Length: 217
Image 1 (cartoon, rainbow, N blue to C red):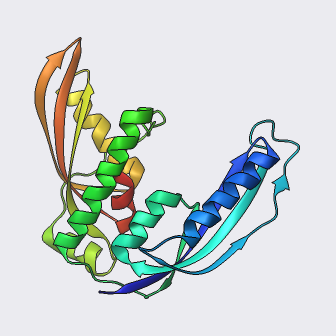
Image 2 (cartoon, helix red, strand yellow; image 1 turned 45 degrees about the horizontal axis):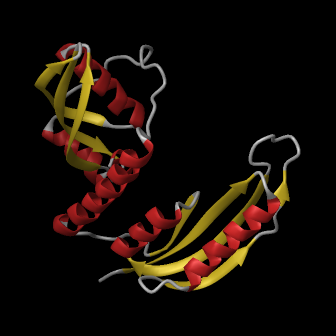
């Protein structure tokens, strides 16, 4: 099992200084009690005040250096939501498909629970000005993107709704492009029509940097 070393930069914000100081104390306490990852070092910055900011005028940063497996580092990332994750080592890591699917499944489950509690977490800007992207790449193009561009080829399925099948496909193509994906294949399968909306499953084969795959998940 490959051990990763990362540095978390966890930003804390509040409109009350005492509440922020308490929140930072809780973050540090939680990190010190971690058993799934090894906490190598911890550092907290002084509370800063931005008088020009009406809401959340106080801020602070917790810097933590952690060691653990890829799976545990991902879990810690979901738990602490750092503003930045700096990978210190290794320079590269290989993960078998089964392990990766397990991690992505846990991320999807975690995000699903957040959406059940707080509603939709993503809002796109108007996509009208984004041109319809290319769909379909040759085997040689895909190999070049994977080998030279260090990108990932994967299948992604999402449930969505829209005015009709055609508008759903057009919107998803532009949304994938906005996220930074190349689209090799896409299939829209209508599930039902209800309340003036068409509900459908969108299955796609995408090529993108690994971090975009995580964002989509």
